[in-house]
Amino acid sequence: MLNFEYCSPTSYIFGKGRERETGSYIKPYTNKNKVLIVYDTERITECGLLKTVTDSLEEEKISWCKLSGVVPNPRFSLVKQGIDLVKQERADFVLGIGGGSVLDTAKAIGAGAAYDGDPWDLCTGTYAESSLPVGAILTLAATGSEGSMFSVISDDQTGEKLGIAGEAIRPKFAVLNPELTYSLPAFQTACGACDMMSHIMENYFTNSKGTFMIDRLIEGLLKTVIEYTPIALREPDNYEARAALMWASSLANNGSMGLGRISDTGIHAAAQAIGGKFDKTHGATIALVIPPIMKKLYKKNLGRYVQYASKVWGIEPNLDHPEETALKGILKTQTFFEEIGLPSKMSDLGIKNPAEYVDELTESVDIDMWRATPGYTVGITKEELRKVFKETAE
Figure: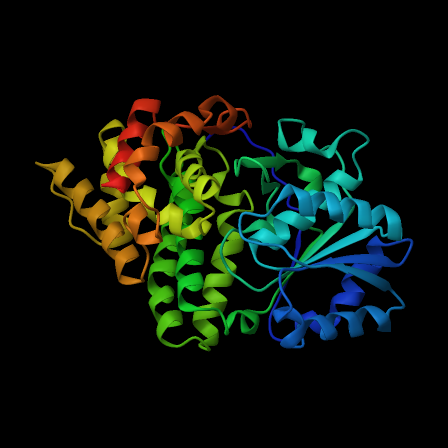
């Protein structure tokens, strides 16, 4: 196990009705008693969640302004609007209500509002050293953004997905009420499950040694997602299933599963190239690339892929033919994605003539950029990535 330092300042507030206490969670972090609320669509208003939250703020004598319009693959232009609104309204806290795109937008606004230079710098390699305090009310279990040090924002002109990184942007608190996910469409639930699995897998498929303890935790998380996703799809208001997925999402990406090891971000590098180019749902693009990436990399780390097949999928290892075991684990993964309604080809997402974009997608992945964050690597080569994109385009 490698040396590490770990501190998660995010307070996780889990359970039914906890969003009604939002004002009391924000109170310690605001001096001006003014909050910017960030969300996606008026669905938050129509279901009554926004009023529940604002009533709680008013009970604590906290005023608020709002910014809506966040879309999947959130845009920098809206981040800029949010930064301007924070300064105009003199808000000193940013609250995101929604899924990963909303929370990434809120975190980017918080960082940009505290940055003296051009906030675009934060999307192109400048580490976020400071931020306004940010809080999260989660309505979609997926990215784990409610407790992570990352925010992913899209360039309005090119569609390229760029990352903001910094311990300062981790939310101060995250409200996790599984009931808020009951109304999610089945496709979004499935995409969320795939997204959290990708974060877990990127930590799991490591060459680092001495990782036994966290390996067992990771395998347990993966088995939890595999067990409860079909239940949540069959029974959308099953509290136990929604609760398990919501907490798995947070644990998958708050950094704890990557301790003591080098993590491989190749899955996200490939998926974000497709998502950015074609503006497709993040979890769906992840489902496209995980199986072909696994097929390209399993021989480089065969023992771990055999371990994955055995510990996660219950496949009896074939000691004489370990490759056979590894491939069975990969097939199980692909079959699971298909069974929960996720795509296996770019054409399944309505992308026309995808083979024409294979070279462009390959060249758009800046492997060195993905390696720039300490503790991360990309184990796949450019040529292997080209083959991954080609397979998803066939």
